Length: 291
Image (cartoon, rainbow, N blue to C red; front, top):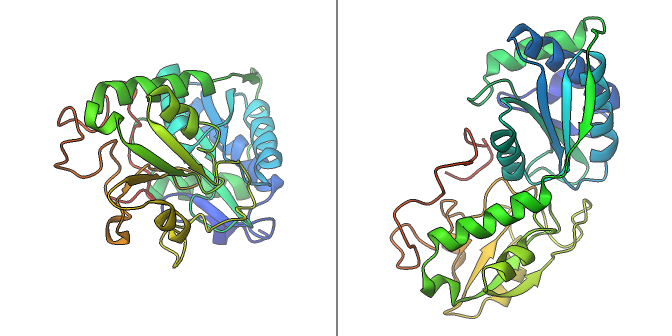
């Protein structure tokens, strides 16, 4: 139906808006998710979205579908993808949908659904696709609750940095490239809260991504950051919609380092061997996060 089938990938739903991803797909996905979570004996579903221009309309219709399908939708508003995982863990809710197209161009959008503690499987997505094409009817008991998790997530990031960054790391100057993505409302405040001198770069949230591609693997995407980071200082690359926060030394060969607070895996900047706090850590691995 329509171009929806082309949007269903192996690990998420993603494609051009509105030819492959539109509000009707969002609504039917909400109905499908509600049906699936009810079959698994729970009702609550966490929802968040990125900064893309089409996200608010898609998120609103997704919430409508969840409510009409009998689920209790917890709308966390604008969050980066790790913030969405944080919200699920903090709220104690296993099911959720993140409205995002990850590293895809600005004219795309999509959904990252999850039905339990582990990442969604291709089989789960095929079942959801079937329910989207042949939706079940409405069910009673649905609701939408709007929550604000942004402040709590920001404070958690600051506390994580205070725990896992060494004094040497906290003394550095950081150039923070948010790429106008979903971490733009958070990153400068987090670095400031850690006492790290921060030079913001593209830190205004803008879902058109006017300054660089959201895909940092595209040639030239990190050129502005490279020019802003004089050796031997180092810069953090925050890529919209922020599936990860890998570090970026002054040479681009290490631009896609493992996502850590530290700058390299054996860096003296790390306070401990653990790269992320054990509690409230994101569950599963975003398929678009560099490994």
